[in-house]
Amino acid sequence: MPSSSSRRSLLKTLSLVLAAVLVLCAGLWLFLPWETIWHKALCAGFARVPGLEASWESVTDASPLRFTLENLDLAVKNTRLHVSEACVGLGLSPLITAHLDTAGPKAAGRAGGETHADERGRTPSLHLRLFRGRVLTLDGQVDLAGLLPVGAQHAAPLNAAPLLTGVLDIHADFKWEKWKAYPVSGSLELGAGQITLPNNIQARDLKILAVLAKDAVAIRNFEISSPVPLRLRGAAQLDRKNFFNTAYEVKGGLFPKGANLPFQRSGRLRELF
Image 1 (cartoon, rainbow, N blue to C red):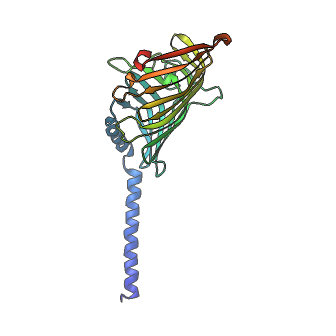
Image 2: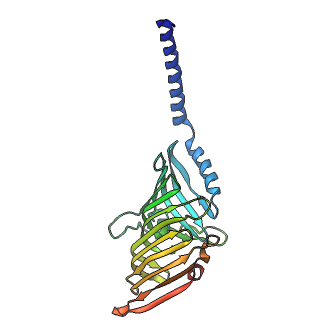
Image 3: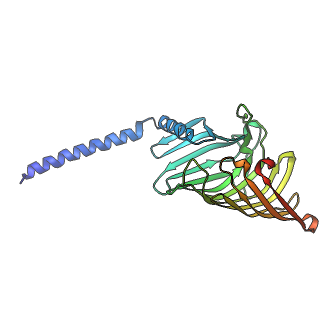
């Protein structure tokens, strides 16, 4: 059997090795250029998502388990969403959490706009959580002034006129089978006290509830109180190759000045745009 002095020597050696490993890990944690590492990783990750273009001003507050993106722009089709600040963290459950500053001051504010708050005085922000099994949840608000038009050849400047103004409440959950495809199930609930549409049309008390099951979308509720009170239900058949080719059908009623007028419409989403 080894002597007590041999055991003490072995323990001392192991302690020194462990201390050296800890110092090395601490050095890597503190002194590696995590801003650069995350920037390159995000560029590679976004490049794998078809139809999505992403850019940001800088990566800050970076470490192995978190980072912050300043002035993040996400472009899909002919619309760009500007996020003033996106704080992202990694963990075990959820795998990813993100807090998005979706208020308009740094986006629309460059054009002389002001920060938008909802009717309860909340500054818009959106919380995203990604869980194992490819489940994504969204909760919070989006300042619609951050939705900017994108030209045919290049992104619109930040002083471009917003497509919509107002604060939209969002509660949603979606599940994917493959990341490069649309989600296969989920639900989406939207609400807003007031939204200003193009041509200065005011839509008030907006409520939308939709449920996705494979390619079928059940529109459980769609209602507004103005400019004309409207309540609808319906369904849509998702076109996964061309979202704007999705077929829809809605039925319900218009209620101007207490009247009850039947309303029905069907067609393709591209016709609405």
